[in-house]
Image 1 (cartoon, rainbow, N blue to C red):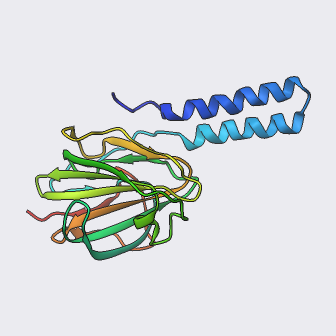
Image 2 (image 1 turned 90 degrees about the vertical axis):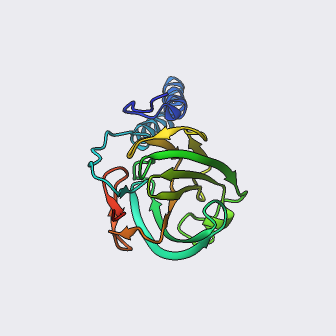
Image 3 (image 1 turned 120 degrees about the vertical axis):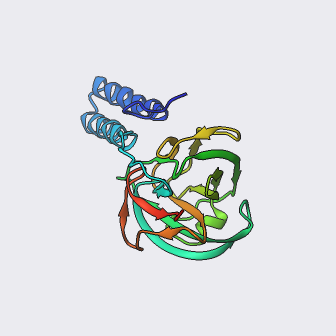
Length: 213
């Protein structure tokens, strides 16, 4: 199923709930509560927006999987899927960022797994090891890479639209996280990083790494 509607379909139950609540409060003449419910419905429309993105063509380009701010770029041993020393990029998504996540480089989905059981603030480093999170392992022509969707203190639901065996294109939408969260990208050491910590990035548009032929 394609996920290119202007509002993510996962958002409509929440949008509709607040809209109906606003109408009900208005009917009961609870005007302040009605106003607040309508504001929340409008904000939910904004939060679940799903804009089109223009992904540049070019061999070896790796694009950001999420909108947000780059928290840090480190080198670690990744033991869930890659089992190797890799470069790790953490991107924090606040409430006002687009929360639809995108495939960083074309390939095949090899592995999808969900782990964790708590909800620490997503910007904390330990959130990547303890919070509820979903791993999506990809095999590209340049090797394996891993994208991790991580919940936060308010983000309590991860949606992943792909499954093992799916062929995916660069910039393709593959999931979302509700209400503030973090996305991590793990790349082979030979990937040349094109961004810096503190930089703002856009999913499917910002080039964050490059593989040299």
